[in-house]
Length: 592
Image 1 (tube, rainbow, N blue to C red):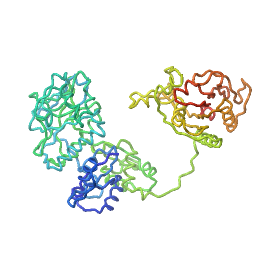
Image 2: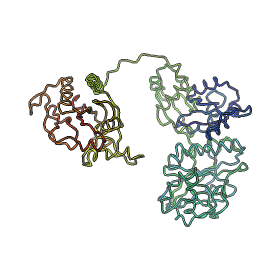
Image 3: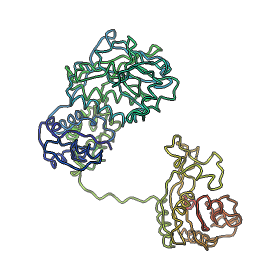
Image 4: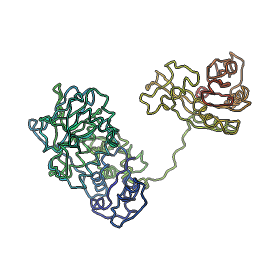
């Protein structure tokens, strides 16, 4: 979860009270966050530079506070202070207002159709009459960085640009142009660069080079101009130096370009709601009209609240505490959610008004969670849960684990994701394109598909432990995934069991006896071929096994698995010098 670093003294001054460390830790726990570390700014710098620890009397104490990943309003000092002051009853829930400006007087952002090729969405707003000091300014910049790392997914989904409105002139245009047509002086630079030259220039910049890949291969780059063709920004890389904000800035123009409109609106709302507290008209935000080439337009930001009606029985039943509607409403108000008892005929529901700061509240369960936090987890009565009937598949899985372990095998746990080669070519198998679930955008070539067999993981385990004393006897009970058009997600899980015996005397009979023991434990007799009342084995021809030393397991007329001696070609690929015998079967077929 993200960690927010704030100065202790500034935090306590904003809260209006000094706390001991223990008292503040308790407050954080009650609110559902955690004081992760107490340090100093100089200590952080020394740690980064690997210098020896030194302490000075005048070093400012820094609190590192861990906040939930979806609470974007807590990523800055302003949001944290506001939430805690409301929680402890000092402040009321603020009402955010979009200034009522006639359409003809409203600032406008015109969007050109070419932007659909690269970053199709943009949302904007203005903070008028804002007052910055050094602390507020740094917090404003830090919030942008934290949002970029969090909901913006390192600027791939959303990129934030902030500008001194007094240095630029509306109307603005959002365009997508070939990089050689874009020229401007970027932030913290003194000379003008062409956009393609800028890509080369920033390849040596430790901070910005990790964002270049987002647009550098595109034939067009997104760019924002004012009416004088002054470049405001080249999103998601850098803002222009001309409109840079400073401590003297009084009017801030905020634009968020995005590939995800919903996240862009959340980011914009977070920025303006957190810092409108410093505006001349507190909690007021000036809107901007975004006009598209087809004539459609939208006004941002949208600071409206949305209502959610939640049954009181759901809240109290899920928490396990008996609470009245008035108590629940009071607890929700502490969490910045205006709540009141429903005026419907039954009157057993709570109507919750969700403000623009609480984008994490999407469902009744989110409301219930906030009630539980405000009530206090330690106050919830301890009760013994009613006896639950275990899932039959898990029961048989556990029984088989125990039985195989008593036969001298050691359980292993391997990755459910593997490489495409490991699942197919390394096992001498061919992909028929109808079985494997392939990952669309894998982070690594080691995790390209969801395994369709437990065999690759077990062979890799032996290959990495080939110097272990022999014999090596290991097994795994785990899920594989296969394509299934009948399922709503297009695939299904199957529970498999696999076991391997590796040693100089590894033979067909060693793994065969384990198969017989498994079937005996399940209560299935060995029957002649063709008899569907039990199980029998039948010659198979699988490429991963040695020809003539392998067999299919037929259970009540259905093929549920295969066992035999692993093909020496496969063993060489996995760097296993000793012969191995292996079995894999579908447990769900036994259970059903």
